[in-house]
Image: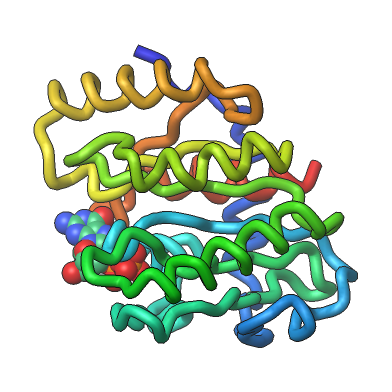
Length: 215
Ligand code: GDP
């Protein structure tokens, strides 16, 4: 299994300190014309709806209510930007969830256009973190965005969520399977981060991965 390599304690501490400081909502962008000026490096979070993205963003920033869920198909076609650090160090970008069972085709099309335009045209975007439910592993709905990231040559990392919901042996197996998927993909980072917003597993490593992404 591909484990998270031991990290320099200093990396973890620098990342902890960064996220203990200001993290503030900047704006929602329903289209590219609404993006903020590209004046800070961006790290984007993607994942199917209900994967635990809002919970993970809140855990990352060590606060509640920063990222809100809006699990209504058709009402989530926005990129949400959060400023991190004072002075500003980076921006977190909460990408609209995908994979709604009942999403109308027009909504899916709109999602694809928004995401593709953002991924292909945004110089400030340094890396994406793609969240995968640890109970399910990588599914075809996830592969759709992985393909988009590979084609746009945006580097990304796969992050397992809700690790507390499965046994350690199952987590080891899904981590292995996810690492196998990552190895086959040109823009994927080979190491998988397993997280739980409930228990806090992997949150320090995820913070360090965000900081690492902006180099
Ligand atoms: P989003 O739609 O991707 O933003 O997902 P949410 O963050 O709203 O989470 C969806 C559901 O999963 C909620 O009921 C959360 O309480 C639950 N959830 C999220 N993260 C975790 C986790 O790490 N562990 C457990 N057990 N439940 C979680």
